[in-house]
Image 1 (tube, rainbow, N blue to C red):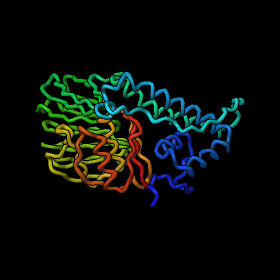
Image 2 (cartoon, rainbow, N blue to C red; image 1 turned 90 degrees about the horizontal axis):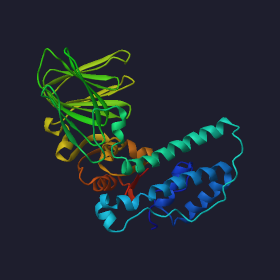
Image 3 (cartoon, rainbow, N blue to C red; image 1 turned 180 degrees about the vertical axis):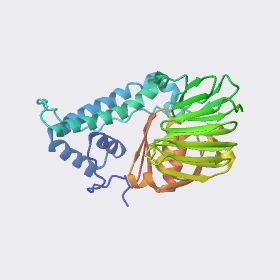
Image 4 (cartoon, one colour; image 1 turned 120 degrees about the vertical axis):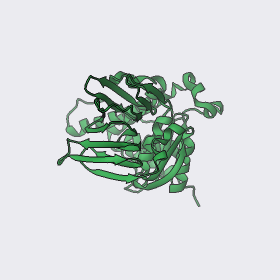
Length: 346
């Protein structure tokens, strides 16, 4: 039986953009059918060749970061791992005519997003403090957690790649979660409510311990002890609920609301180096693993992304965690370089 590459060349799974071809060819560089399809794609439109040249240039530029950051990559670096060479398929890049159609603009915009995604991997390696440019008072980089003592005796523990801004006044204590996740242990003071804002969602407490997390299109809140009131006033109608120990809620910014219960000790388990997933989509779990990997994680396959996942994963080894996810889901994991991992499935 031929080895499964995850890139059967049917209409549904065939790469359609330069960034998708890059990942596909790096995963299966010796797949003759894939290479033939890539050659046809290049020949089909002059813009394809230009797009490929730009995305390949971005990939090679990221590879130049390898020597400077080799020490950060542990065993992978010790083994001499480096960026995989691009497939030896070259095309002359046609001279660009003046822009003429909205179709071209949309293609260039899509390529720009793909290039930005690849550049994110480089930024993680070369600019670990980039999150601090977002106007945060406290921030963390990839793989870093930090405990912050606030002026009122409350404490905040920041997860990797997270940021907060603090604004205390005589009448209230307010913290804004800018990125990532944070665990709060709040000193009780009924005269000064403690409020955490995360996009359009606000959590208000008097004295408790809870986590707030920014997710894709939503804010997640889970309570370890005490009570927390959560609100989304931007929803129509507004959403409001009171959470107690072990309760969690996911407030989508479009107004949708989901809630459940877990063991209180499992709230913010990342503080103990663990990721606890209970019937969560693979995409959400991968999103939580990304800040612990000093590089770029690509998840391919909408069916895989939606699959429910339950498990406990070691955050100290995110690649092993991704490999475990791949095994349970029947997916494939490829570490294309020390800084680029691809998890792909149906």
